[in-house]
Amino acid sequence: MPDFDLSKIAVVLIFLSILVTIQVVVKRSKFFRVKLDKSNNSAIKIVNTVAVSKFSSATVIECADSLFLVVSNRNGSPAIAELPKIQQNTLTSKLQPELVGK
Image (tube, rainbow, N blue to C red; front, side):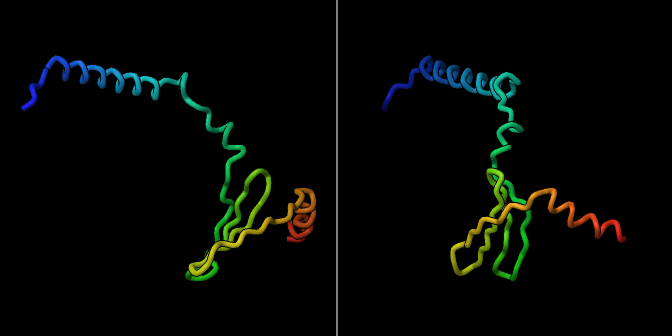
């Protein structure tokens, strides 16, 4: 039967408690926090999701200033297509006559 040395166990427990304390202090410190707002500019964003049927859906995803259409179903792999870019000026000029008439 091995002999347990309580002083060695105490040293290990103290060391572990110091590590946990340092981790808590670092995580709560504002100095070490990463600004997530700046890094989200290049992130993948889900623009909209539509259920096409009971087992399939269509999702528009924005990534790196491009839009992609992802159509997925239960039986196969998803199909991905890049959507053409629509300029903001073209879109607003098409919508303005409709809004003025109403």
